[in-house]
Length: 151
Image (tube, rainbow, N blue to C red; front, side):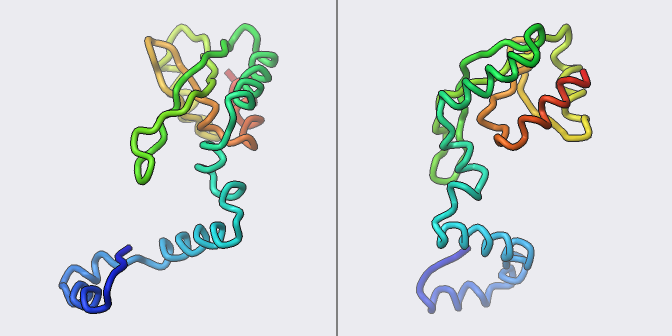
């Protein structure tokens, strides 16, 4: 998106690449919907990244404990660090909690969960598969639990 003085915007719009770089209808609709959440002061509830960023360590720990209760032999609770994406927060980090899933082969486990009906992504550290619960929306906990039951 380009904002600026009319004379400069007009000049940019005359450039041969202007048509190639203009926003398409799908992205315009997505931008419109996102901006409406901000206008209605509901971004925190409706935009997933803000839900993830605003999750408290206490809440993340409680969620991890629920998974541990369901799968006591399969899961360990671990403190972890979430790196928040680019834009206005490049490289920012937040303390988080995750679940370490015990497996003989972390790569095979990662493949299995990634190729599951409902794809689940984690990371491998020191041959251990980890899911940072900050990256899983609250309403997807049951979906994750079901995938773990199928293992």
